[in-house]
Image (tube, rainbow, N blue to C red; front, side, top):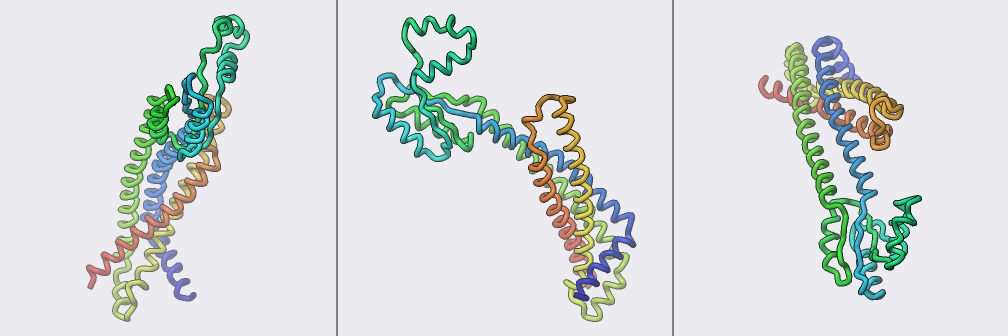
Length: 300
């Protein structure tokens, strides 16, 4: 316990002695995380929107009028057994006509007189929903080959564009996160490097009296981790405040009436907070470890 107390004490004094560089490191982490936070918020909202769209997407599998009731039931069983299908509903010809008629409200009678005179031309169908839009193409390929199925419709072009946009957004987010991580790592690396250089005589004395590399490294690693966590905490508070303000403006209709498409506050802030704290700790510890390890190797 005394040893760990000494580690934290030394880390505190290192930060206090190098206030300017420590502040620069914290500012670097905050700046990187704010940019990263904007990208992550966009990615979270895109994924949230895609999920909402996926839940509303449906495939209609149209059945031939000549298909027997037994064959229709077999197709229904096949759909139920298909992976990723979350919902299936059978739509009779009568039900299909009712839904079609509901689109016209008060003009229903006038517009559907021809249907009433000539019989119901609408086909029977199955309405299918899935848990992942990327599987709609596979389900489509299987169902259109089935005997008794005339067609299957699910808005292929719309789904393809949506999935492509989501992939591009995730890829761009990953690249930006990597670049900003390297910038933060380099800044903390240089901060700890200057701290070690200022204490090089103390480090040499510790080595001469038999202190292990781990004992020498630990205060610097703690220092870097603390700097990273402070930067992460500041960034979380700023991102939290800005996202709260944006949500408030959207709900008030001051920007655009699109609040229903934005990810809820709890989901965004919770993910951002966990990621930022973990990121700040890891980047700070890694930058310090690399810096002090390099110094110990070159000072032998």
